[in-house]
Length: 173
Image 1 (cartoon, one colour):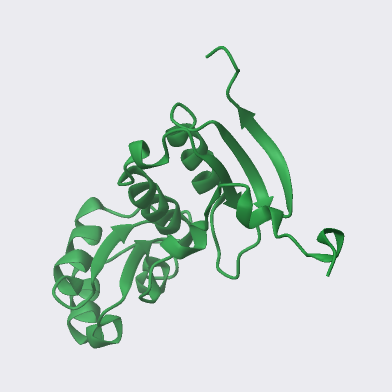
Image 2 (image 1 turned 180 degrees about the horizontal axis):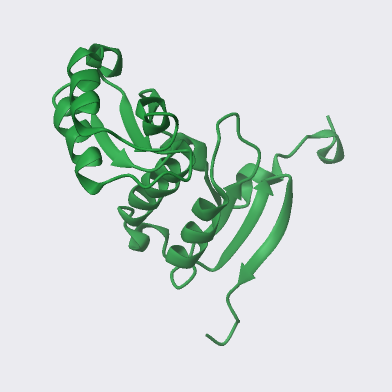
């Protein structure tokens, strides 16, 4: 076999470090709790009715789930309503947070990314994987770039075989 006939995997020899943000996706289910379902005539929250409904609500359905609490209508929701939901759900749900699933994912990814040690990526040629099977918010791509740019030699987006250059450290830096 000639040297020319040998296939060389240049991607594996390039020293690229790939980060798959989808790996940070929560393993447990994310469930939404919409307060609109508890409004009187879709407009107001009546305290006694709300307390009764919460007491009768099946909280076990949120066992080992992340629970997000929000109101999808323009109703004015008193602050204590969110507190009551948290009081009922804590101990069953893994965590209870304000907002919808999209907001939860933004915050979740932000926490995960900010917990990384940027020093571990010092002078790395980084590829932030683009295609994912799970929902990764655009804010996660922004945050990983912001966090790691001061440490890495380059950042690319996409797949190791086909990337979009995002950042390259100047040679004299």
